[in-house]
Length: 541
Image 1: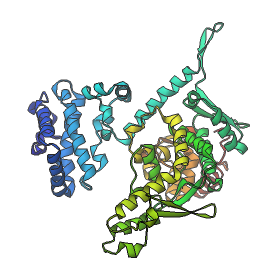
Image 2 (image 1 turned 135 degrees about the vertical axis):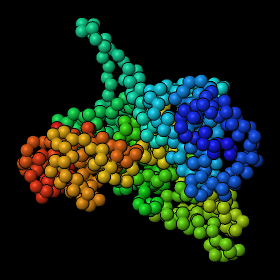
Image 3 (image 1 turned 30 degrees about the vertical axis):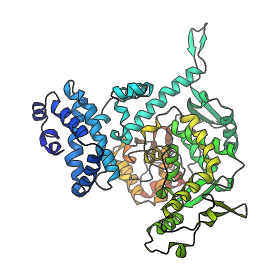
Image 4 (image 1 turned 90 degrees about the vertical axis):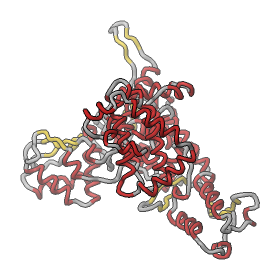
């Protein structure tokens, strides 16, 4: 491993590196040696060693990870021996990645992202993904697929890859439902969209009716929303508004389907274990969440991380508990260093809760009501309690939700993602850096030096958080930023005529704000403020 720290293996002068190892033989030999000379016991020793030696100042990343990423970059860019060395280079990187997961603090997931993989043509990556998914176990064992190693992919790269996959699936679904030939016109036609034509006043009821009757192939077409009686053409903006409005009704606690818990800094939405009468409702909600993700629309829902871990079929632990107070109490039980746990906490392997006004009891294990929690069995108690609260108590509700979600997303490569990345794709990031948005903004009819533009950004930076969120929704149809933040959001400010009292408008499907050339800061503040407060409904936008 010390050889990895040689500058000739790192990001030094490209010509020197090529001369030092032109065919990649040394890189390949080095990585093969690492993999063969360190069996399981050696791996455990390295983990302890790296924890103590490399924790400081990012040495694990700079001396071990980056040199291998530099070699991987060469392998992607060049032909010959170094390309043949890529499988063992990636194998050692995965080995280091696993060590990072077990030794907290020596690296972050982003330290393993490969810029070279991000630069690969997305269609080439998708081709690799398609071959990987089609390969059997033997082929996967003998063939190198870059998509078998998603820890090297940045969230941006994964998002782009999944978008291509969805687009291909949308075309397949559109043609699968029938291609019609017009002999007279000598043309072929097919229906590329799953059209939801609904009344705004009865949006939830009509949406659920149409979703329930839709075939799986229809659900995998591109979604197109039409509000009856409105002239808006859905190029994306109407769909964004549709999901924004629908989320308010879908996750309303008054439906009886959901409960709210304090999961950290904010309230989270969790399944109501008392709601045993509406599995169809959870199923349809799962379909709609899947549709939003499949169509690339951010959804305003506040699920805890446990939901995303369950969707990824990952195990749950104490840190996934949805209730902050319960999590804190269980942690106190584990941390207590006295020998009188039984007397202090007075717990047994039995849980009690209220359901429909009646007290319910359940033993976490056979005879649990008579088994006290002690210093010796408290870890088992916490494990069983977590499993009961996050799995068993809401099994019917969650299973129906997951079944609906997977009806849309079953063929998607969600296993490329981590639970945190899946959450970002579903809801976006709440971190709103408007300075980054300003830097990424383009202008039509204005320049960044135009007085009205200067006044607009002055207003944005001085506005309250609530006003900023409403402005973002008005201009883009969403209250959150995509993966990568607002700096990754294409945004345009377009001149909408001379000074007037007209309100600004927006083309949310194109993230475009149409701004009149207001002659004063006060007028701009007044007109923009009125617009963002009254932004619901798109008219011709």
